Length: 51
Image 1 (cartoon, rainbow, N blue to C red):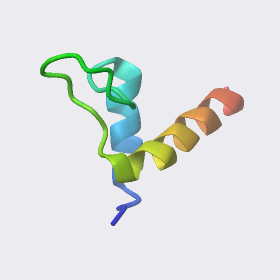
Image 2: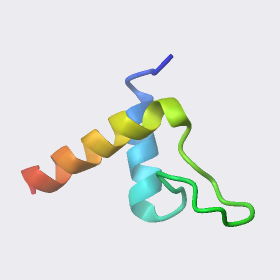
Image 3: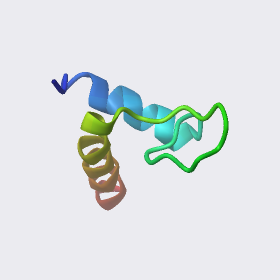
């Protein structure tokens, strides 16, 4: 279940470099949960086009 208020929160974590949107296989890496990946990617894309 995707909670809408978590999408911007995960987006901030991804944009800051603290979390990854997709797993890369690095040990100890923090990754956005799978159910949030597409919504967070869409949110980030919308932020880029708005800027």
